[in-house]
Length: 203
Image 1 (cartoon, rainbow, N blue to C red):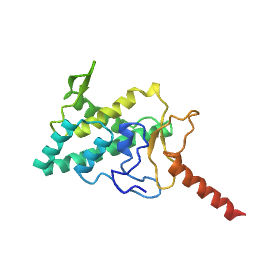
Image 2 (spheres, rainbow, N blue to C red; image 1 turned 90 degrees about the vertical axis):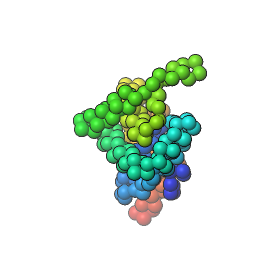
Image 3 (cartoon, rainbow, N blue to C red; image 1 turned 135 degrees about the vertical axis):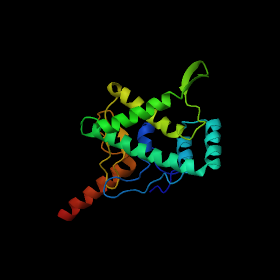
Image 4 (cartoon, rainbow, N blue to C red; image 1 turned 60 degrees about the horizontal axis):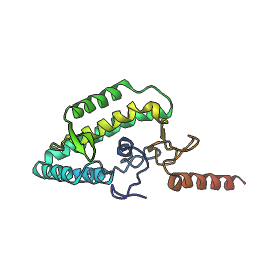
């Protein structure tokens, strides 16, 4: 079982969903929360390879200079995480996107896109955040969430893991589109073992 941001599984299949899954469980129990400090946030985005070394160093320096602002950025990111969860859990049941959650994510993404600059990357140009302000952390994930929304017709719906003490969200990329678990090796095996034991008790 994971105990920190450093050993949590990355099973969501998309940065916005990996953010949602930094809360270890939403079914049966709540937590623990792997985002306990701004250092955890930086370690998380580094694991996802969303920010280069220069951007990470810039954010780390700004967090050290203003710890209070770093705490605010962490709190804002956690609020965004829960809003993204509210938005995409709707896909699991084919429900409409909740308008308040959709509006919040869109507004945060719009603010982030206004801060982006066009940079040359190898032979291409990419839009990138400057990462010269701690707010760019939650702008990064708001933009990722809207990218997931705008690609809705090009992917299967987001699913919720049905495992006990889980509830993580993931993109279903299975061949038949019937995946139930965030990970076959963890929640899938646990659920099958539990079902087998329950059948044994019935005999």
